[in-house]
Image (cartoon, rainbow, N blue to C red; front, side, top):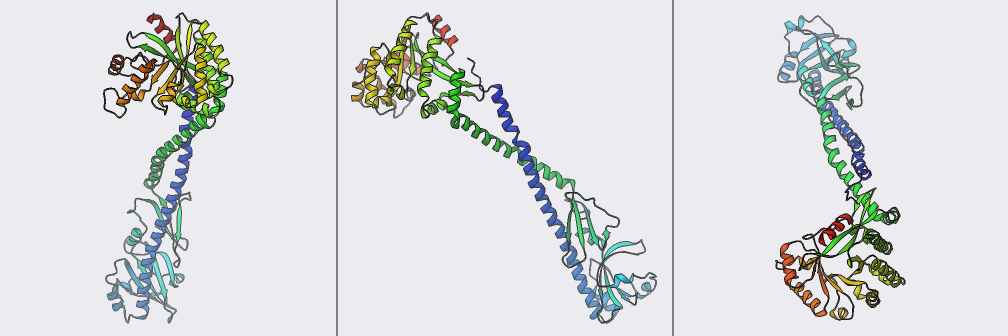
Length: 500
C-alpha cells in the first residue's frame, strides 16, 4: 500500500484550513484599522479646531484691549506691531473704518468699502477682504463695544496662519481640509464629498467647524498594515485551527474513525526483517501495523495505538494484525518463516486468549509460518500474564520479551517466566561507542540472556559499529535501519526470495 503523507482530500482540507481565515482575519483587521484611522482623523480635526481657537481667543483679547484700553489708533498700531498671525485689526464706528493696525490715516481715507452690518456683531466670520492684490478670504474675529453699540473691533487672521493651522499643504496625512463658518467655507469654493472617511469637528465656543479627509498615503498605510498584520495572524490561527482539528480527528474522534477504518480496510502491515548477525541473512520479520486515512493521510502508530488502548480497541487491532498477516502470506514459499506480532497486555488477559492463539497457531503452521508474539517487559509484572506464557509456548508459539531493560522486571520474575527471545531496547544499542550511564547495562543484559539460554534480538541497529559490536558479543539477531527499514509485503517477499 502506498505511503502517502496527505491524500488529495486531506490536502484540500489543509488548504481550506489555511485559506479561509485570510479574508475573515483581513476583514477584521481592516475594520479595526478603519476604526483606528477614524480615531486618528478625529484627533487631527480637533487639533486643527484647537489651534484655530487659540488664535481666535488671543485676538479676541486684543480686540477687547483695543476697544476698552487703547486711547488712540497709534497705540493700537504699536500694541499689535509684532502680532505675526494678525493681518490687520480694524476699528469700525457707525459702519465706517476709523482705524487700522497696518494702515496710515492717509491710506485709511482711501478705503471705499463698507463692511456688512451683520458682520459687526460679536462672533466669527469668513469674509473676502479687498486688498490691492485682490480680495482675500480670511477669518474675522469681531467684538462689539458694549459701551458703544455702533463701535466694533475686527481682527483679520493672516491667511498663511490659517493654512498652517488647517494642515493645508504641510500635512501629508490630509488630502482636504475645510473650515466652515456660518455656511461659508475656507478655502473659498472648497468642497468635500461625503464618504466614510470624512471627519468633522466643531468648536465648543466658536462658530467654527472643520472637516478633513485623509490622504491616499494615510489610507494606503491602513491597507498595508492590514495586510502585514493579516498574514502572520491568519497563519497563526490557521495553524491553531489545523492543530485543533488534527487533535480532534486523531484524539477526540479517532476511536470512532478507527472503528470505521477497520471495516473499510484502511489499515495495512509493513514488515521489518530480523537479520542473523553471523550470516547477515534474514531469519524472520516483525509485523507492524500502519494506517493511511483517506481523510487525514498517514497516522502514525505512536498516535493511534495509545488511543486504541484507551478506548478498548487494541484487541481488535491485534486480531486484525493476526488475520492480515495470514492473508498477506497465504502464498508463502519459505518454510518456518518466523513472524513476530506485538500483543498488548489486555489481549493476554481476556478469557478467550488461549483459544484464539491456538487457532492462529494452527493456521500459521499450515502456511509454513512460525508465529511469535512480542510482549513488553511491563506485562511480566502481572502474574496471570506470566502464567499464560507457558501455555502459549506449548501451542508452538515463540514468546519474545520486547523493549527489555526499560521496565522494572526483577531477575526473579525473569527466572519464573518462560520465553524464547529477549529483545534489547534501542536506548541501550545507542550507547555503543559512546560513554553513557546505560553503557554497562548493555553488556549486563547480554550476559543475562546468555545465562538464561535465550536468543537475543537487538532493536534499532543503525550503524556498522553497532552491528559489529553486537555480533562480537554474541547477539544472534539484529533489527534496524542499518539493515532494513519496515517494508511492504511485495518488498519483503522479494527480499526473502533473494535471501534464499
